[in-house]
Every structure is written in C-alpha cells, then in structure tokens.
Image (cartoon, rainbow, N blue to C red; front, side, top):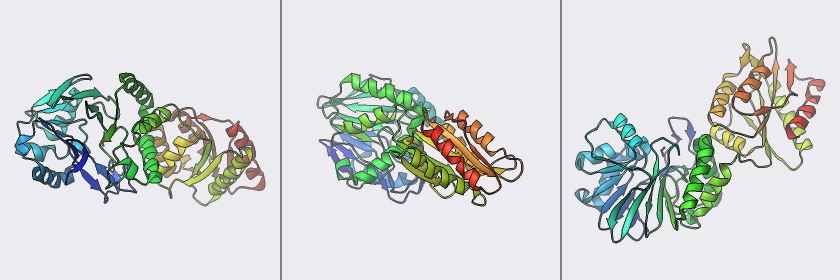
Length: 395
Ligand code: FEO
C-alpha cells in the first residue's frame, strides 16, 4: 500500500525486514532495509525509482492497485543500480512507451543490465526540469559518484522535497517511514555505517556536492532517500552530518584490530589496548577480532577513530588471509588523516609487521615506526614494548 508523504506525494516501496546482506555479501544488514519508490499524483503522474528485482511482482501489483499504470506520465530513474531499477523490466512490459528521465550514464547502466535500448530515455543534466502541473516542477541534480557515475537527485518545487536516492539513506527498516518515528540510536548507527561503507571513498565529492546544494539555497522541507527513513524532522541534520563526515572525520577513539592463530597476537592486541588507554585517558578504546566481528561494523569504528593498531601473525611470509582481505577492503574505503601501528607474532620467517606496514601505508594511513614483532609467544619484554608503540600512536 502507498503511504502518504506530503500533499500528493506517496511512498510506494518495499520495507525489507528479511534482508541479511546487500551488495552480494559485502554489506551486512542487521536492522532490515528498504527500497523507497515514490508516486507523485499532480496533474502529471510520476513514479520516482522502483525496487529490487525480487520484489518486482509485488511492486508492480501494488502500483497497479493504486493507479492505472497507463496513467503514469513518466518515470524518474535517479540511479540504475538494481535495488532501485530492478522492477523496471516488469513495469515496462506493461507500459513500454513510458518515458524514463535519467542521466546519460544511467542510460548506459540500465541498458547494460536490462538490454532494452528501445526504452524512451530522456537524458537530463543538472538544472533541467519538467513541469508536473499544479504549478510544480521536478528539477534534476546530477550526483555523480554519490555513489555511482549515473546517480542523480530530483527536487520537487513547492512541496520542497529532495528525492536524494542513495545519498542520506540508511540500510534500516522503519515501517513508520519518518525519521522522527525511528529509534534514534539505531537510525544514527545505521546512517554512519552506510556513510562509511558506501560513501566514504567519495568524501571529497560529498563535501563539494553538499556545498553546491547549500549554495542553491533550496527551502528543503523533506529529504526522501531511496533507503531507510524519510527526513522530515529537521531534514538538514543529515546534510550537516554528511558535511562533517566528509572532512576526514574522526572522534577521540583508537581501535585495535587483529586476528590470531594461537592467541599470541591476541595477547599483544589486548596489551596494546591497555597501553593506549593509559597513554590517552580521554580516548575511547575498542578491540575487534577480524574473524569474529562484522567487517562493516569494524570499518565504521575505523571511520570514527583517529588511530588504529592492526595485528596479525606471520603465515607463509605474509599475514592471515582474514587480515589480508580486510586490508584490501580498508584500502577501498580511502580513509585519510589517521595513524596506524602494527604488531604480530611469528614462529619462523616473521614478515607480518612488514606486510601490515606496507598495506596500511597503501591504504593511506600514517604508520608509526615503533612496532611489536614477537618471536613465538609474547614474553614480559615483548609486552613491555606496547607502551612505546602506544605512545607513538597517541602523540
Ligand atoms: Fe541503493 Fe546504489 O543503490
């Protein structure tokens, strides 16, 4: 069923409480998610985005129960990714001549995925607009690389709604739709996790885009993203947060991240955390075992940190595969202005700290010189080195 957003604007999407992962298994889902599509019923009837392919039959049936599909004047595809375009093929089978407004890059992504070059694409750029009657217009704003080259947002005049697509979203289920109805603790936890894992690589572009939107001086009353809650209570609060998060964000937190074969490196991790807490009493210190904790949550904790300490034992002249894979993900997220320290145990060749140092440097971290590289299980002398590493990390 459609749900009322404002005046003649309705939400018509899928609140997906059953979802467990997103982007394959690259993003963990702990509190559900939603794919938000919107129906505008002014003099023109407009559909903004659709839902993920597995929900396409349900979506098209719902839409048909609310509106004569043939009365839809046009569709806006803010982004071609399958979680928002997945129901387009099923819908377009029923209304094949309906225009689709999207960016030039979205024509590429939609055609590449669904192989329908005959669809009536209407390519738009920033500032282009369409009249929807009753004195209202839809104005398009390209959101290139937020987070795909094809992304855009749509601004509805008079009602002052920004349909922002992925930007300002969260993977979070909220049947009540609006931010003021949500559990605030979970909402913000999911918003920062979403920013870290999806948008942080593009933070310089987020900063520029927020400045561009602020310069437009739009009287934004509602921000309606394509995932999670609709921001109607102080909608600019999420824009301000994005601006803060986009500028090499950090809190007074230091996070220790490790994996261990026989618990030697685990002992070093706990000693490192103890010494960091002593060296920087104001800091929040957390420890995560890479194999036991959720990798997206660890990344969110890295995002909040001013420094991290990473540990792995040596395995066949390298590091544990869990740590190696995690370091690749860390590099992908392009953190900046953070320090790092390395530690690890070894039995024979002992390359762990060298590999950790190289990978963390590649990932953009400033790695401090002191380290703990411990042969076999830590002795009291090995553990005593943690104080020097902690001092370098917090200085
Ligand atoms: Fe929610 Fe980029 O798709």
